[in-house]
Amino acid sequence: MNIEQIKANKTCLDYLGAPLKKTSSGWHVYRCPWKTDTHPSLTVSPDGKVWRDLSTGAEGGIIELVMACLNTCDFKQVCAVFDSSSFSLSKTLDGKKEKDLECGRFAFFSVMPLQSKGLYAYLTKRRINTSIARHFLLEAHYSFQERTDGSYLYALAYPNDLGGYELRGAPYAGNPDGYKGGTSPKWITTHLGIANAATVVFEGFFDMLSWVTMTDGVKHNLVVMNSVTNKEETVEVLRSISGTIYLCLDNDKAGEEATAFIKNALPSAIDYRSHYADHKDVNEFLVKHKCGI
Image 1: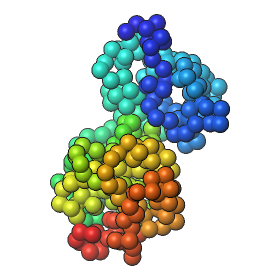
Image 2: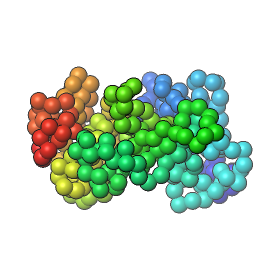
Image 3: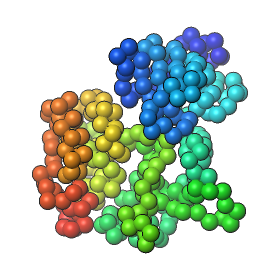
Image 4: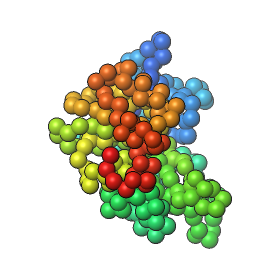
């Protein structure tokens, strides 16, 4: 496709996918893909033809949007995106280096297959089957400052459906909870490849890995919210799913509110938290009982 054909046949909505929400005037709201966007600032007109970045005042159409996501002014690169079999934002980001995905938060960021003995020890401490972990997780190497000595920090990296990563580092003396962070864009993660199977929803990937460990393999479709703030996006995904839905969120205020939100939208969804009612979450249950729920 050439530039004029793209403008005539494609919209920003086609490229960005489902929005976080809509304004009262019908504009679609997204997190800006090319920067860390804690407070979603990218809006798209009801017809999908125009986008605006409310934080900077920048605006444009579908061509300018793809250029911004690719960080390029090369029309050939833009056309190549739309000539592919899938031109979604997630497919665009699949081909970019992880350092570009981070949009400036880290001075260095790279992912690779899981190999660190320290991270394997961390998974074992939390009773996660490491063979299962390798199926879902990568290893991230990162630093917050430019370095010339080749040293870096490392963490477990769990990809979401838009190409961002949830990051979890092992606890250490200065941080007993371990590093918790992520890269942009922030989104949910879905594993929906099993026909006629129930779908189980979790807040974070450690609970999902705990569930798969306890069930001795992947026997259900899985949805990981990656944050309870993604409850609206989670509902939109779950609306398209047939079959039983189990909600395995945390036994705390945030988990209660998110569970209530999802059940209000999808009354048939089953709150499964009573099966680990004396524990904060699924992983805590696994650590203390070392068995299935």
